[in-house]
Amino acid sequence: MSTIKCNVEECYYNEKEHCKASTVQVRSQFPNYITSVSDDTACETFVPKVSIR
Image 1 (cartoon, helix red, strand yellow):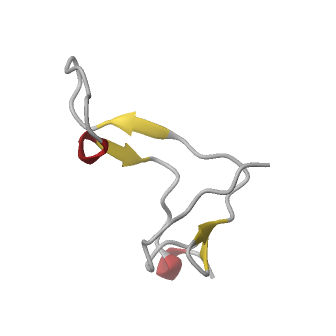
Image 2 (cartoon, helix red, strand yellow):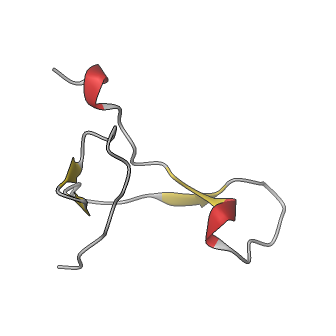
Image 3 (cartoon, helix red, strand yellow):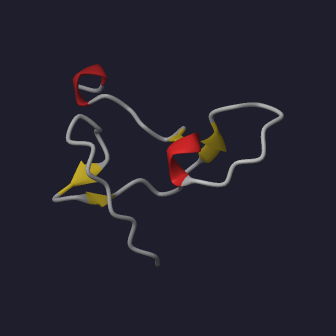
């Protein structure tokens, strides 16, 4: 299993700066645009900690 680092403290899946989600979905932030840097991507797996209780 891969280790995915995560610095988003507000994400439900972040546990000590590692993503604990069973799968991770990443997408381009800009449709019809060739992404060439990580800043142009977004994590679709993100869930705010406050939304899950």
